[in-house]
Amino acid sequence: MYRSGYYRYAESGYLPITLLKEFVYCPRLAYLELFTGYSYVTDSMERGREVTVDYAMGAARGLRRPRVQQYVRSRSLRLYGVADLVGEVEGGLAVYEFKPLSQVSRRSLWGRHRHFLVQAVAYAVAAEETLRCPAAAVYIVGAGGAVMVRPTPSLREVVRGYSRRLHEMVERELEPEPVRTQKCGYCRMRRVCRP
Image (cartoon, rainbow, N blue to C red; front, side):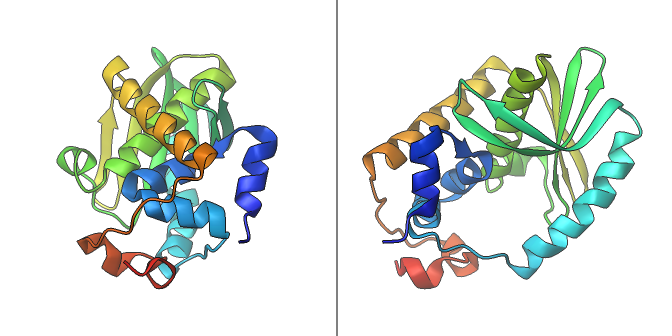
């Protein structure tokens, strides 16, 4: 089995925050992406990348010391990644995650878009540790506007829990069972997974 992602993990002990997002969406998706090396960019992902820069430039106007595409790393979560936008506001850092092709709402972030929320808070934790400044706010910006979330202790604990479970899956090479859900119809790994 081709496992380049796994070997990078074995060398560093760190996983990408985007893999945590995939794990929250579907643990099997994260497993297949890491252990098979099979991954590709969909049209919507490519379009999202193009629009993100425009979103970032607009949002950066209200920030002190804005940093677009900021590399961040969390020792406590053993995760790393590139946050779309990080800047300073009163009280600390504001971390932005752009999802320009998705309609996000406060309600959806606790439901079908939970993976976006966990990803954004993980970036906030990593930004705190990298830039040595507390995270005051997280913004998930979708097609219909921005939703601001405070990175509360309970929300951080949710992220830590997912991170622990992701690392356990990787370290023990525990392949999650295939589960058929409505998400499967949209999944880019459906042909590899075959639930």
